[in-house]
Image (cartoon, rainbow, N blue to C red; front, side):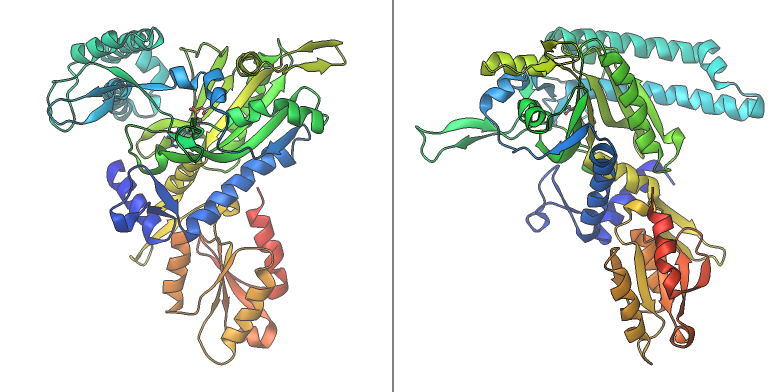
Length: 505
Ligand code: GAP
């Protein structure tokens, strides 16, 4: 199946089974905004818990925070967002469609990358087991030509973006002959900058009101509370502050489902360290975060680092963890060494000292910061798209199964009485009452057992527990495992141990 079709099927599956709905659907929807349904909210909460535990519960020197979405407007002046949180936009005069100029160029690069991938695949088929990919890409003339082309485009784009040279970005689009995907024309406007922050007014009457912003990242709430947390928690550098919360960006291109939204959630952690040690900590967090992803068992080959060549002016190292989504490798998490930029800026703009006294060194300093920042919705998309499988079974029937990591599954066990009579529902209810105190469970007695199994497969439930006539005699049930569909007869008293062993990470 083509990846595009697969992705469409995933999106409709999410809606059909209560994971994700388009926002305000009865009013024809709101672009780039989505609601999480009854299954989606469970999966999302489980991802949050997996992240929170790995950060706050397992690290004695990391604590949590829940700062407000609204902050003093000067926060965003100090952070640089008012002046520089912009996207370069360009309009096509014929289709009247608006695009991010850098994304148009990146899409062009992606097409050249596809050409390289095709060459590699052709050669792999030709040479079979003897194929050495790294040797091929460094020696094949056509691949080298394409790669040089990519390098030159990237260089021109990054230089222009860095210098905020908007005419040079437009010139690059013209030189590459990029056409509007809708009109097919090259009739472009000039490129201009567009700030991504949403603003609103606080105060009841016009004279009293002032403009404030919906936060475009959760990180600044952490920076401005740095001293509150450090002092009240008697935290010693190195230490971290973790936060999960909503962020808002007026994204111009809204596509790829929940990958790029206007309202989304971030899970961010700022780790405060001694100046001079930040690159060691950067390395530590780079490895730690990749291992966190890998522990879910979604395939090592689906992750890669993308180290930034072009660094933001405040960073001295940065990398993205990219995941292989159905539409290609894309950023899921950023790890940045942000130096003392944010704390120093807030110190300057607020006039309040934001320093740490280090008793071991006997000196005060502004800590340096390593940030790990992951989009919760992108994480959700990675999990669901990796787990979605359309299978043809041995008997020729088909099933759709979500092979979710069991720890993240919305429902851990389904309790199914074989029939609706003869005391089976009452017995099944007892099993349900016993398990539901510890896990999210679903009781289902409607339809034939096979149909009920399929419903649970489709939402990723790792275990189906069937109560039958034998259960009434000897307190045993059958337990069916989602991925293998293998069934086993066990005693009811063994259920908790079996479920626990499976859902632990
Ligand atoms: N505090 C740093 C920061 O916000 P970022 O790279 O702009 O860095 C971090 O965002 C993460 O947030 C990204 O890796 C991505 O997973 C997620 N993210 C950013 N914009 C998003 C959007 N419009 N929709 C969904 N997730 C988004």
